[in-house]
Every structure is written in structure tokens, then in C-alpha cells.
Length: 264
Image (cartoon, rainbow, N blue to C red; front, side):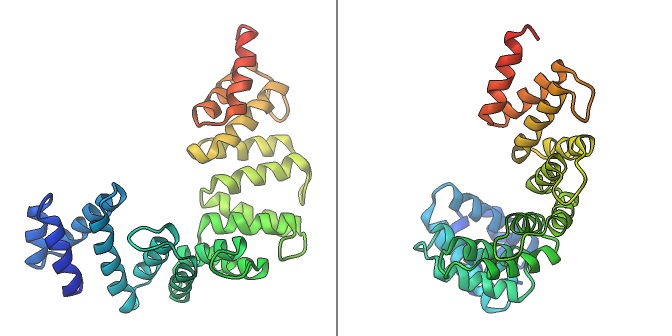
């Protein structure tokens, strides 16, 4: 499962803090090798430069044997400058290789690089192309980004109906930005009939998707505060503003304080 070069390097590195795993891996236990790699990855994230270098060896060996995940991880390493010098051009090449092997994350990150012009010439149409492929492979945020491209007319003609189709798929895949932006479409009546009740449902789902859903909590608070699409209830509005605040959204904190001053 693992190449000898990478196993040898991993074993040497892990002896200090994962001797048991290292020995099991050396004896051919593939599950132990997998666990050991997670140890090395965590060490790298914690600032161990040697661990990062070993991961690069492992990823390189994996990519050379046409394992898409290895190519993707190499791309991430070059994009973030972890274990190697930051190099967006190299990152793009590895994401391209991963994408060619139908790795959704590779396609998605390549789309981001084309959108930002990092390591490649900025090209909205190419960004759209790679988001499309990633979305077809069920990458939630790729579908969401594709929806926004159609909403804003970046590299494509503005098409609210198509935008909402992609946002709906993104939301079904639990993308907080996808759910929020679909809710915003119902607020504004873009590609759909304006419907605050429908918007509230999408903001509710957005709010339940963790930190990325802060904006959904905030908008749900606004709807409860004004009674649009839901029964007006300032106490409930305060709860959602508070949740948005807990997730780090400043305007959620501001709205929470405003209602609190009213004695709610």
C-alpha cells in the first residue's frame, strides 16, 4: 500500500512519539501506517518542519503512482507553503493532475486559482469549467461558487434560474454559502418568486451548518424581528442574533445588544 521510501521516512520520524504505530507499520500493518500518517500530519500542522518534509515525500510517491489524493495534497502543500516553498504554479499543476483523475477537491482548488489568478492567468471561464467539473463530482462549495458566477455574470451570462439550480444542489450537499445565497434569491426574487417564508427555511438550514452559517442565523434573526416569512418574535430574533454573534459575526452581536437594551 505504501512505498518503501515513504514508509522508511515515516517510521524514523514517528519512533519518538508513536513507536508502537511505527513498529506495526514497519511490519506491514496498513491500518497502522494510515494512523501514523495522521500523526505526522498533525505534527506538521503543529510546526514540525521535518514532519512536513516527510509528508511531501509520501504525497510525491502517491502522486507518481497516479493516486489522485496524493496529487491533491501536494497541490495544497505548494499552495500553503507547507513543507515546500509556496508556489502557486506548482500547486496548479498538481491540482490539474488530481482533477484529471476526477478528484473533486483538485478541480475545485484549480477553479479557485483561475478565479484569483494565482499560478495561472486569471480566467473566469476556466474557473467556471473547473467548478462545473467539481460540482458534477458533488463538491458542495464548487456548486455554490458556480451559482454565484451565474448570479454575478462572471465568465458567463447572468442567469438567475441556473444560478439557483446550482445553489439548490450546493445546499442539498450542506454548503452553508449555497443555502444562504439561495435564501437571498428568495428575498430578492431573483430567478424565483419573492418568498420570505421560503427564504426563512434556507436561512434556518444555513444557521444549522456551523461557523460558516453565521450569516444565515443573522438573516433569520432579521426575519423574526420584522415578521417577514415567520411570525414576528423579537425574543426568537435575539436568540438567532446571539448565535450569529457566537459564530463571530459582528453585526449579529450589534443586533443582539440592541434587542437586549429593549429588555428582551
